[in-house]
Length: 130
Image 1 (cartoon, one colour):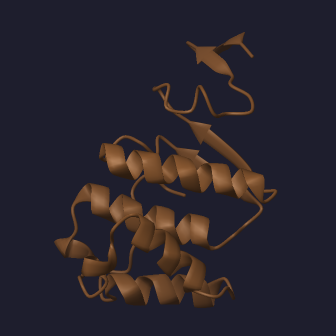
Image 2 (cartoon, rainbow, N blue to C red; image 1 turned 45 degrees about the vertical axis):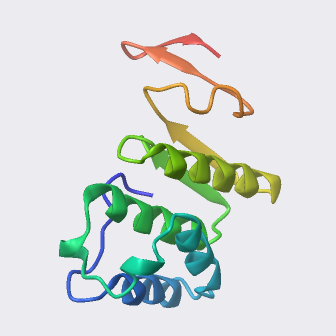
């Protein structure tokens, strides 16, 4: 899931979600459910240019996680999220792992320290703790 969501500018938020579900041959219901957890229902008819960076990120996370792929890679997913959205994302990641998915997250923060199955610390390109 990219840090900056790649949304098609000529599609609304809802159309972007449907497009990605169709492109990956997935049912869009999980994407919509995750978007609702992020409180995005009021943005479904909005154009990507109308969204803040954090809202774009929540749309991208809803799509990326909602596709239900076995491996989820996230780079700094907490940076532009408010505390409620951070908590929602943590719940989503825990649910993904609980259903057999693998989640790999890079972060400068400690958001996952208490919930991650494994934490690897890298400093100046060297592994310092695993």
